[in-house]
Length: 235
Ligand code: SF4
Image (tube, rainbow, N blue to C red; front, top):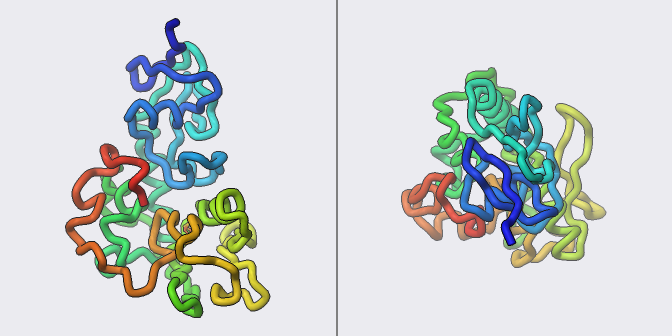
């Protein structure tokens, strides 16, 4: 039986009923830029980096159900400019100093920005001051790099069966919260092998003493552009 299809950038893409545009594209090896989406978790729809045009409407590919005959545009001048602006806003809202970051080469924000052709921040930097939490023996939290994707929250709740992280505040005051009596990671029940401790797409949740286990230059996105890197090896 023929599977239903939709069009992505003019190419026919088969899908399984129930899949979203982003899920079907990823399964078929077609890259749609994204940050807050991760296979196996309900979509968050917050980063908007996966925004595409469906017909004439702009929609998030991670929350749009694939359906027969859908015509999806991934790249045009306006979409690419919007995606670059969203990424540039994420860079200036936090402190992302790639050359000195231990996640360089395995950071999805950095790799996605390279793929989008970003060469500079464009907007004025906020330079927030968010104190690091180094209280845990094996893990470090570098809040200054948080892009509020919510993946650690969903991983902790839906996979680890805990609730170590939450997103608090609103708008510009939104921030990552550690759910413990003291608010510090050492007083939470996180374990370094938890998915929540291993899913951050940027450099917030870090393993101590492991920052340079793979030398810079040999990491996933040093070797492959994010558009052709295997999704399941990320971050
Ligand atoms: S700590 Fe990482 S995974 Fe958690 S919300 Fe921030 S960027 Fe996302």
